[in-house]
Image (cartoon, rainbow, N blue to C red; front, side):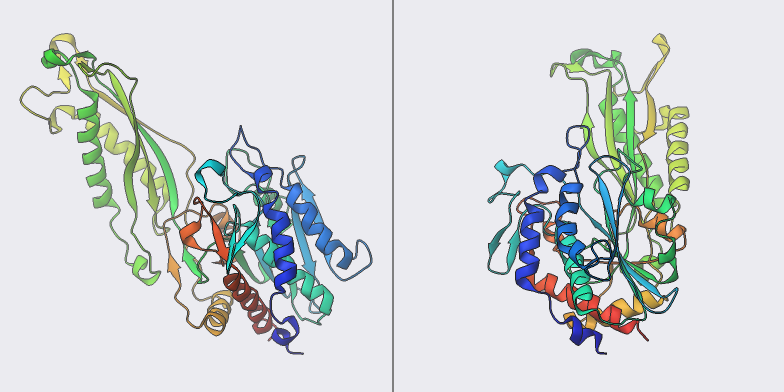
Length: 434
């Protein structure tokens, strides 16, 4: 049987009807604790309304559906279309049912209801990731309606709690821990939560850091009696960054993976306690992150950053100063400026296996449907997938929203892109029948 022919094209009316319901829930699945805790079961309800009539639960079809909840109102859904060959499996995982926040006052249209402008489907979650939730739901619906005979079992896993790691044990981490995804190790796992229709073959690790700098508060007209923490912070950060780029230079494998940037370490926030313009403050904090390509180890970088800070503290008089009276030590008062570095939760990047069957199949399907294939890598972070790879899954990633509207105001996706995504999935299933 011709799988691609049987699965046909994405049913526009059915897809948009479902997506409209999902975007209508976007307001209630914003993820920003403690203020906004998503209720993913509001999305689950619409998925189940669509698929339960075609499931073994109701006796109406072949789909095996498991609604798994670890936290009230915050479910995951595992949907299985059984194949005929034991142990032959492929899966589409990672479509998440929570979204990042949206402020309607900043948008040109209502973020919490689907609006359509030509090919554009507009609203929070259209690209990331409710559009994909609707897409894979439509795929499973079509498989069940056609009752096509496949060698492979096709599994879709819709997850809760992807956009924020403040609360754990709710989503895919809990599913893996409970062994509910173990059988997916027997075939390629396609993580569907990226953008622009091309295979994303590499992501970045993230190390959020805070550099707290202590000086001595004093009047700015008597600068010789102060230790200026702002100057100390600037000079110290410059030194830390130059050491970082010396120790973690661009890696040769980044070229193979087409990374847009090498590993970076930079400031993104600056804070100090406040005070008059004529007052040198007593302290300040610079925060930022390291984005690390997966060819370096996160723990090694954190250890090095701590060593840099310890060394600068020990040799603070050797650090560059700013002008003839700028200094970081006041010997008469037995005072020294001081740096401390701390880290928030870090995560590792992933480099997909470019030799795997899953990768080759995805590339061939993409070329066939989109017209060209150009895998790419970015140092944006996709949480969770490195852990899956470390657990033994063959993880490949793709997505059919738009990178330019990811987490952005006025988010939208294109129906034509989602329709191509559907055909890529059909081609992947077809190729893996051999």
